[in-house]
Length: 611
Image (tube, rainbow, N blue to C red; front, side):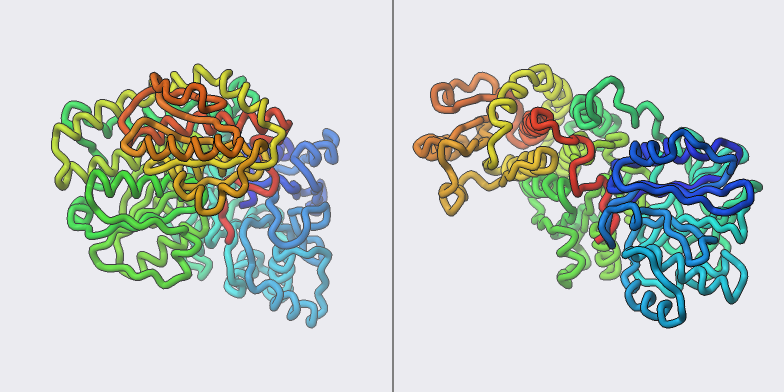
């Protein structure tokens, strides 16, 4: 989950590395550091606990004449977040420095062996073990690339690394296994980074390194090869990302910017796919597996976090529109529990980044069992996008805020398209398809209507910002939205919140309800509205504070609910896309009232690339 960047070229290195780290700070923000050369080709390492701003203070405006360097922003795994454990890490001699994203699982065994051979360690990290292991091999072979390959063949686990050495100060070596790494190809300059946000300012020409692939960068060019020393001919891709997409654009936080981008991102998810006048959907990324989908007896969707909540909505959608049984699994459980899969199953995996470690492992597990695996991802060229047999990009653009917002509604939009696509392929009539397609095309404008009333949600947030617990309740399509609303509040405000099916309140959570417990109900006027209304009455009879999200024109709740948030009317199956937006705003304004670090909530990182 850390962010790494390496550069070799003609530009001033210090500011370039610091800017690259800032672009990736959502990947981790426990500490930061960089390594560059001095005029004598000795490595200078500067690192600091805290944010990148703290590293800048340490540097105090100093710049390096070096045109080669590596840098790192950390999300701690092994060792406390402090100055010593911050990256880069060096070997015993100080002649090799490395930055690393991932986990070396057998580091303890290797560390013990190295200590027995006379090597020593300054930190608690697994990364330092890799640096010293490279040193050990270099002492014998006197070749940095060869020593790196030998070391990487010894380690187990995941890594995305960049290395510089005073032994060979004219190159940067990079390699990956299980952690993303992108090679940027500029004019007389080359970069390597954990994601495109650190590269796009310099070049849009990139190579996505594959697992067990490494790159050797010099000022004259680059070579890619496998760790076993077989040269590769990697395809150069063009980034679609624009620099302005990863800037705040006048908003106080990226999260608020991304909430307000949703009318646009939902439109982008629909564009070229929703055939309104045909009541149908065109999904080019599924063309090659159309018959597999037509004949599927069961669909399994696996994901983590917010993407898991989207998958639960997808289950309701696909089962209702396409009449295909759907199972939803946490990717972290799916990969370890020997799942029973059949030849006519389809596995969909959902991941915003396309790099989520558990979800990527689920892809490999399902593929090993011979099942058709498809992806729903945001990042073009990501590992999941490359390793699946097809899929659907959500086209949400870069999402910088750690708490996902626009990616979630884009996932819901794409899952609705998928359900309509499968339904029309099977028994869903054109008349039903037309009704859904027409209403779906109106969703972006309806989201904008909700955003226009954000000041009302801000007032509610200020009233309840000091409470210690929240309960979120919904039924049917909106039960997963209760889960997502609670997750958002927990992530950025640090208030304890739980989501439940509304009817399950009576089976335990009702014991928590008193005059200090706000309960958020998602209550569209659908076929189970009366049941939710009864649940609201149960909370009110116990003095709970009731906040209700319901559709415009519903007067039933006046005099019952303490607060009502209205959203535009739509079809029941489309209500999740609308009802989640007020919950995103409620979480945002609550966290803002509490002065939380909204874009960088404690202990979290955007892209979970480690177990």
